[in-house]
Amino acid sequence: MTARPSPYRFLLINPFSLAPGSSFQMRPTDGPKEEQLYNHADVAPVLEGVDWDLHPGARATHGNWPVETRQEFLSVGANRLPLVREACAGGRYNAIVLLGGGDPAYMEAREIGRQYRIPITSCAHAQMHVAGLLGDKFSIIDVSETHNMQMAHLVVQYRMTGRCASIRNVNFPLPKPHLPDERPIQAERDRALAGKPSVMLSAAVTEAVAAIEDDGADVIMLGCSAAYWMQPLLQKRLNTIGWDVPVLEGYRCAIAVAKTLVDLGVDASGLAFPGERPAKWRRKKVF
Image 1 (spheres, rainbow, N blue to C red):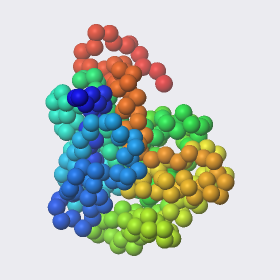
Image 2 (image 1 turned 45 degrees about the vertical axis):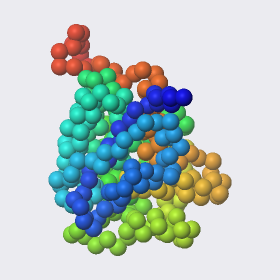
Image 3 (image 1 turned 90 degrees about the horizontal axis):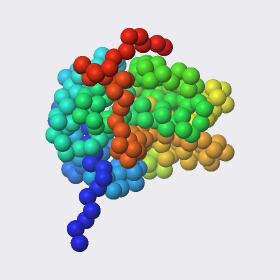
Image 4 (image 1 turned 180 degrees about the horizontal axis):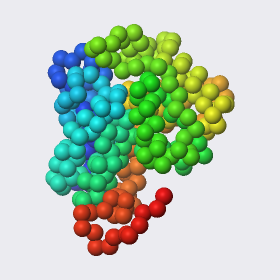
């Protein structure tokens, strides 16, 4: 009996790829797609039944290190847009999921997707909207001062200032060749997954509790995708000390939202993302 085709044909696109041999790689770059998808074991349940491909991301032109500053986000976002257009025009996919916690060029990618009636989702945007289904206020646990400012920009851009209680910083910056990497995130991840003490995870627990007690958050989300590995561990730690609060991460939220949009048969509003010559146009935009 022939297997029934999946209703979900998704392309997952990483925010960027680094040159081979870079000492700043934070995820595998070869092998099966499951091995290359960051935290695949955590993401696998939401990918069940999805026909998916993974693109490694456009080669980074800002430098051979991870993205953290506004100018780096702008660079990798511009590099990713041709991949979005090519995937939309190809006809194989009915949704595109943009990976990466800082959502580089997400709104511009949606403009492209709207032209082809293909939904585009991303990690921070999806988390914030899922958080709105779960509670009144969310707080973002994030990795560094510079990355915090990208998340703050997204909160404003997505009109979530009334829903975001706070952005809290655990101060584990991403590696750069010209700066010391005294607190490597990968080492913290390896220690935590091995059941050993992790300073980063402990800091996330401290900041999450402060977000709940001091800022009024009733949902916690993670900012940088390099911190997504903490989701199940942070969820367990908070539950253990008595906090019945959901902890979100971006990959699962973005994939789940893409599935919902496909199920509903919608992509984006033609008023929010109008074509170049819309049949109807508005004389006035209000805020």
